[in-house]
Length: 344
Ligand code: 26A
Image 1 (cartoon, rainbow, N blue to C red):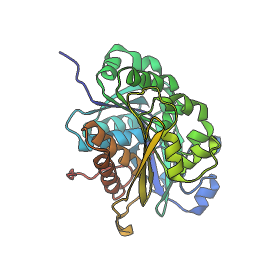
Image 2 (cartoon, rainbow, N blue to C red):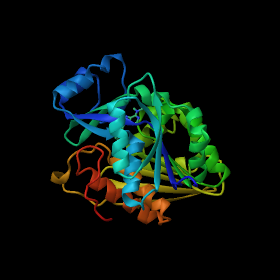
Image 3 (tube, rainbow, N blue to C red):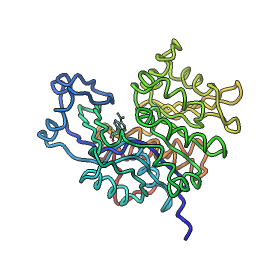
Image 4 (cartoon, helix red, strand yellow):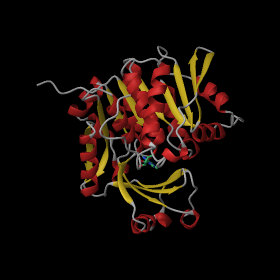
């Protein structure tokens, strides 16, 4: 029997979110900013138990895994496969089951030694601070991707979505997907994921960026990219234009840069040989009372946007699908989507 094919293949770090409401005191205790995402160090290890004691909820997370579930929410059955590394434990089982229920096919590497990764999420008002202990998620290996039954899924996929967070884990696997996309004129999408990626993983990011057909980020990540490359501008439109105009491996497609900025309009820059076009799309505003929490809003946007691309929709429609799914997700607890399914 011919193996199943999935048009959209996503790669990144499967994590379980441990999410609770918090306050300035707990942020200060662990040296966290109210709206940020960082990698946990020794001094953060007590955070997870402290959040559990605050009646934290365990919610499936991992940025690109949220995006994979989001895209599948809007696409026909069997459209999305997600790849990453989990541990041999209960948390890993929860992630697998959640993806299955969302109709996302998973091909996890299962690490023998490390537990499934977790992300402490502290909610204060409409902000979320995330502190990730990658554990097993840090053990993803190119060998896993190159196994024949998995590489055949890569060969059958037409769209690749990689979370920039994976730049801290396995650049060779990201580049293998990027090369496949460039060689066969498939679509490669990268999310910058967090300010610390352009800041501290600049070289890794710069090795992948030339392959991107779509580069997605929010305004803070865009500014962090500009700062780390000494562009001398904080203007989101300027940064979008400059990102779009960076060198590109596959000259058959222009680079499209998509920058979300919360309630402000989504900025899109499309680069084609020295001539960059900019468009802005206002968001459909949600009343503040309707917001549950913003954890996963950007992932949901990316999920809706990718679903549009996979369906061959216009840029305008794809952005609209992203904004629609983001507004649905922020009305749920954590990076989740409404069930029973709502139609776009
Ligand atoms: C490497 N890091 C820091 C991370 C993450 C991450 N996903 C992958 N790698 N830090 C936070 N997240 C996820 O981001 C989602 C919200 O956008 C969280 O698990 C959360 O679900």
